[in-house]
Image 1 (cartoon, one colour):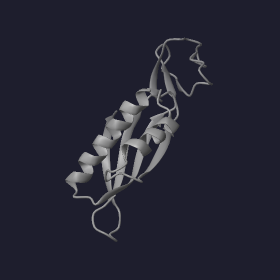
Image 2 (tube, rainbow, N blue to C red):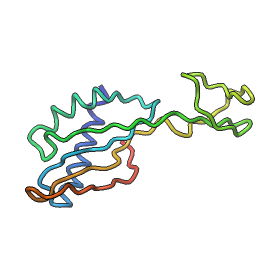
Image 3 (cartoon, rainbow, N blue to C red):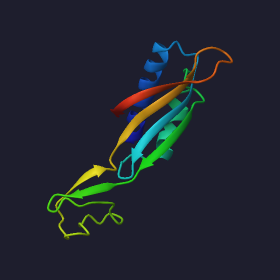
Image 4 (spheres, rainbow, N blue to C red):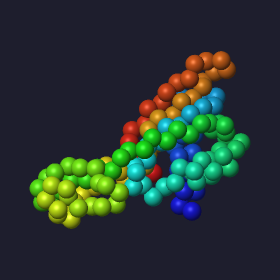
Length: 130
């Protein structure tokens, strides 16, 4: 159920940035999710359709990009993509690892229309975690 709060944050961020650009409507949102993120894209999509209704973001398309998990061994420094949830370093078999990528979740960019018939404007977001 945490997806509702996350989706509300996405909407709030998108509306704030669209307002700063005097947008007429938000057309697309680009969301980055790590493979080990606990957020489920289908749930975000479900809540999005409910909470965006009646806002500048109603009907906006959500685009999800998954980042693969990458681990780094604290013992030997080897960087690798784990096989499933197996954390063991393939180089030295150590279990002392840190996650380098794969837990991300942020709004990367939004696209808005500022005037009827105008081309879309892409508003790049900094890596603001949600």
